[in-house]
Amino acid sequence: MTLRSYIFVSCIKLWNWATDKCIQTKHRISDVYHDVSYYIQNKHHTWIFPNDHTLPLPASHISNHVPAKWTYASHELNYIGMETPIQSYKLSWLSAKISITEEESEKEFDFDSFMAKFRVNTTPTIVPKLTMILLAWCAETKQWFSANSKIHFHIIDDEGNEQTLSLFADNNCLAIRNGKISIREYVVPPHDPFTFYHA
Image 1 (cartoon, rainbow, N blue to C red):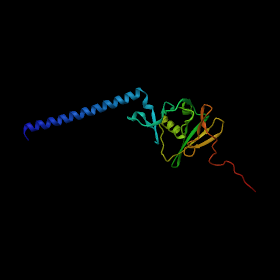
Image 2 (cartoon, rainbow, N blue to C red):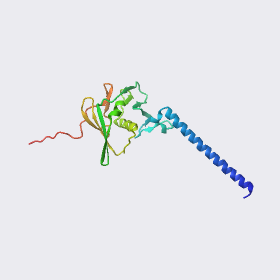
Image 3 (tube, rainbow, N blue to C red):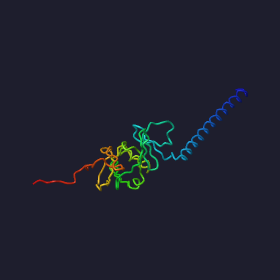
């Protein structure tokens, strides 16, 4: 290799290295700008519920338009559809706990502190499913569970009745009544606490 060829190849290597470093720096600056702008706009705590999707996605990780009807941020589940008027509703429950059974272990979580601040901004005819309320709680508390988990809400409703709602069986049990989100009708517990004996 001649000296001229060596210098030419070295210059090309240097040019490629400098170009690569400039591109990397540009991407890092762009990422930092993106993260800071989302933080300033408070979108780092915003979650998007894409249509026909199982889990919410953080808004800070979505760069294109995602069709969605619900968002969650700062204890507010917001309906973003075309229907109006939008009103704010809270859950009518007096108290609630969530029990999660994964494999053979069961954990209970307090839902009361979340429920005290939680609001749903929607129309009177569009009510979120029980799953959406659970996922809003998961996003707020950063608690996530396996898809195979058995999840139950143990609640005391606005009439003082103790009820157990299964996330699978009672997913569509909510309705808006008297300006609050409540259970559509009394849910019969999964087992009958009374046993009748006949002689």
